[in-house]
Length: 349
Image (cartoon, helix red, strand yellow):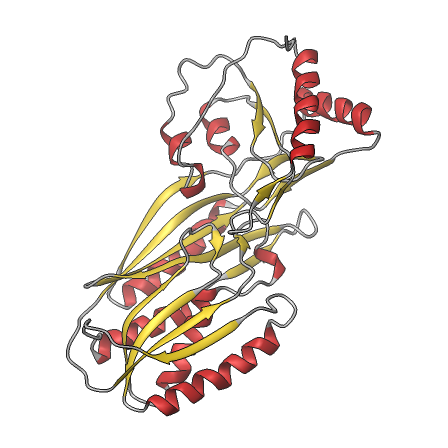
């Protein structure tokens, strides 16, 4: 019963972990060059451009050996987190970064060996929790150093992350700790890896131009891996950040893999679809929509590269706290968005 022009429906996989599906999509059968991209999180906002990005895997080899001492587990939790693109400029703490600071502080007061560290589950989500196991000579001094820094960090993030919690407890483990050299390299990586906003746009006030997020930290028996989501609307700055990650990791004896690279989606000055959607929105809502470019990754850049001349707008219903355990979608907003979609399709015949 919906009036619409000829439709081609594209469903992709693995969008959240690097747009892997769109990257390998065979677009040969597609004839259309107008795309309604239903992949946005705020009703009333039409996205018409986005940053490019990639996932960067930093691998550090580990050497382990026996070391006598007290074994502790350090936990960071209670952070707000959020989307590593559109919320990277809100000042929320990154659990993996805080863990690096805590381990560094503890190592300054007592001899310390890192056993394991982990935090975050997605490179495009700001991690809300992290945990590390260490073996130390002086457990009391290590715990006091962690508590002192934790109090300072709570002051730093009292507004952005009021629920920040740091806990240090004794624990038993059968795993061998890393040796002194490897521990030093691991702590150096966690302390020195860049994170957060790297540059703001000079063209669009308030828009983040370049950023990265240390999204995943994990340890195996012989390797520690840190996964970063790198974003930029300027290709040369995206490469600059990747070069920084590669330089640091290789100096520490590790290696870097770049996965899921995708281009920026550039603003199209002449867009019949955009004007049609603005017209329909104005009629249905009685106000003007927000038309913007975002510091987040959308498949429009990849598909636009494969389909020259693609006229595309990304939109969607309200979603709250995306990329966190609190993510939810608002049903009434879905209904209004569906009505908007149907009218745009009707006028596109």
